[in-house]
Image (cartoon, rainbow, N blue to C red; front, side, top):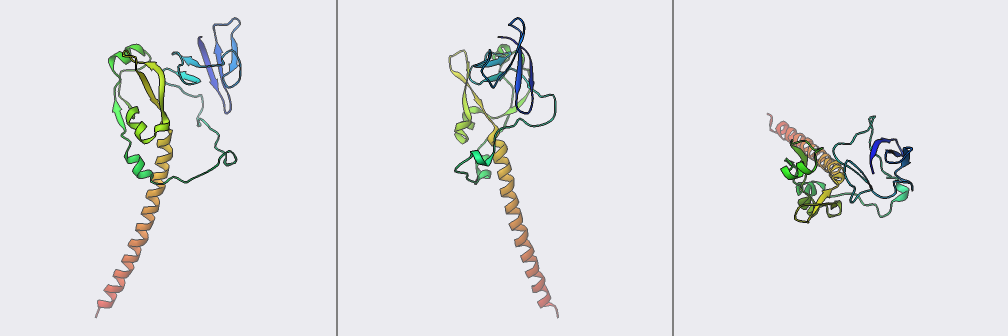
Length: 186
């Protein structure tokens, strides 16, 4: 199946499939000729939509997900975000020559990410098999790094609270020091 064009909006994704005459347009989130897994420049093995190389949108904005309170239960605030993030090793790396050879869309340059096996120790629910196999038959792992965004925000909140408490403590100590200095004046 060959996808020749793709477009996305606030609540839809459309793909133009050239193998059918006439070409058909179908929504990827509804039953149609694309029901199943779709790959752009790769065979989709695990996810509904997989893209080889970079993906982009035609306008600024975010990829959205449902986050309405009315669809959530057992809501708990995050705690210990600094300690949890401290367990994640962020890396700068290059892909192996054999991986680059089998993925010609990738550039031979340095990339930023994490190591899936290490990430799984901290965020086990966010590592899964890609469906793509190495020459030895083992499955390549893929990560969803989204938890890093949420835990980073929680860590910033923790640091803000700690900073605020330290500022209050410092202001109190400065006031006490001024009173002590004043009491020692002749």
